[in-house]
Amino acid sequence: MKNFKIFLLTFLLFVSHFTHSNSVEKIAFLDLDYVVKNSNIGIEVIKKIDSLNNKNIEKLKKKQNQLKKLEDEIKKKQNIASSEEINKEIDNLKKKIKSFNEEKNLMVSEYNDFKNKELDNLMSKINPIIQEYMKKNSIEILLDSKNIYIGDVNSDLTEIIINEINKIN
Image 1 (spheres, rainbow, N blue to C red):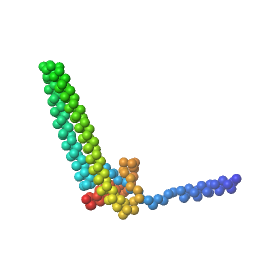
Image 2: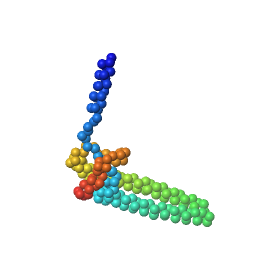
Image 3: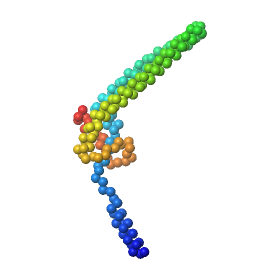
Image 4: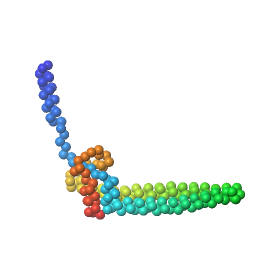
């Protein structure tokens, strides 16, 4: 029994020395949102997306103001005009509001499709650059910094990747 305890203790000490993992895999991280917002090509894409969004907002504001004016006119006529005439104008206003909402929903859908297409296109241009950098520097795993709690500053490749993207584009 005494020999067994000595053997077990020796075995545990021996095994505990070899449990440390000496990983040779190089892991790094980057802030992909920051890369998109600060690389030259990303800035261009964001400008295109924002431009379309601003145009859509302006169109919708104009139509919304027109509907508001029409509503105000109906309210002013309410005491003067006949109820039949007011009801016709209210029905007409409801139709215009319904049309406005449909147009707004279509605009939002088209905007989202455009945005997704542009971002996918951007990522298809950025990904080969990132993969080439990883290959050159023997990086096996690259994580997005949103998923990293804490890491070595030397493992953050954000600025390096932005510079690599800007060199090519």
